[in-house]
Length: 294
Image (cartoon, rainbow, N blue to C red):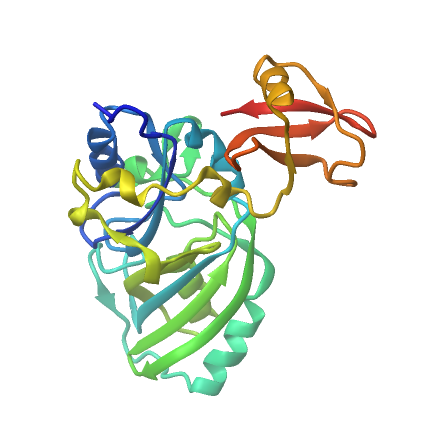
């Protein structure tokens, strides 16, 4: 059980080890939090390591805001190879006599993959097709087509290149598949690629340098690493409520707050001690109504 007086709502910036599923990390957190609800903000495949933000308790209601945060990755690819999974988890086949791109050609191709682009998710992904996960259908040998979708890639930088290995630093929006970026980059160069390693180095302001090793979490130290739910909403304007306003908001009632976060449609409301109590939405010039309570 949680210790008396110890808050169980918050965020954990965890360093997921390679070989672990994101679900396994969340299950470990839920056990340490005495069964409190827990969820992660953006899946990392078992092959990948790095930043996995896990929300606990009422903070699980903030998932949508993590979708707005940019993600940063370090990724390695092997050129001249392909696999059904687009990474080394699948059966790898080498191309016959593939071209060896120059670093200049790679840089030019990467530039064309930045901005708002259309991307087809990998067949082995969690995308749903008529209610079924694509990766389950792929494992059963079923044929299907995944529609392209719009994703945003802010930058692709070359960290190192020694054929066949290409190492990239990537910053992108939610929903972007890094292994598919490698696939499309290689295709544009007349070759193929499989992702051989992936580390997520940041989700918004949650950086790997501050991430906690999952395996070091214990029932004794768990609560020491919980971060304020406010870390999930840095993009929102903030307003401080009086004790009376906190009561009204928690009762589902709107409040009048003259000049509060003018122009903002969603506002993070904190109590006099600075704790997040609600996300408010504007219902008029000075009228704010609770959208989510914590």
